Image: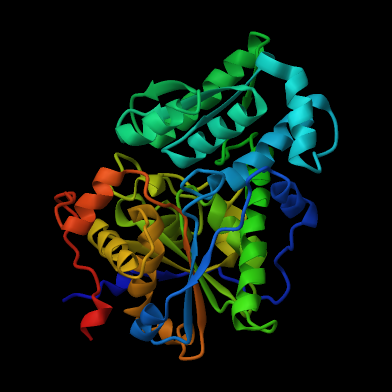
Length: 401
């Protein structure tokens, strides 16, 4: 079986400078903990996977549920919504969700939150809008799976279907927000990707995600002792907001951030190789629906270019195999979430990976999405899921060794 070593890119611009990453302010974590029903997501030890890949510990940070949603996205969306409303009202950031709720109630139906999505970010924005009593308008690509669209609609959102890809939906959402401002309507765009002239809100999304990494550090210390640290963190990449938050919070000389993308939507991989942002044209045909993005966020790019140690790209077959393997240890995940495990196995096959994956290493896989399509998940476990015709790479079956 070919090992496709070319699917691991060692970032030529990576910088191993101690202490250059930023620790976000504690106010972000305090804000999240003030949201009714907010709870930490679990950090699950999976010794069988650690044994398979030859490292000391593997943990899965399992983002299966945040405020009733099957993804981490609401952590970034909630902080970003607070930021855009604070900017609208020309006031400092909200220290608690209660303070944000009080301010939003005074605005009522005069404010609508909007964004583009391929599933989870839009659902998160719509959910926060509903909690605050605001309207929401979500732009989705025409090929988005029906269950994902229905989940957003159940949050009370107005759905705008856009012909084309996720990136086309992003452009349409931006155009409509600009038109709304010109018409005097208060439609606030809460995008997790950025472009020239629009970076502050995506940066707020990234800052919101810092709570996840603060949790991970606390949980790892509880599991392994106060001196425990992460040696390798694997994160899936769509537009790169979450991965840039990982770099901001974790990357240093002692922790290497490794990213994972679908081979059909490898915009970060291509950008790191070219040393500049590269657009990967669609259609992006991968079952890793939450990662099907063709362009890295402008706001995320500087941090990613400097701080990502290596980038991997994986096939649908590899992601599906990872879904099954996580299910075998009691972790229910989508293909997008399980991509981190697929990326770890792809990294392990690279001849240069020994510098990261040592017998003493602690690896954390950020599993960023639970099951969003139950029928599709059941088909994966039953072995009847449909793959794209051009996705013929075999997964690495570490358990066969």
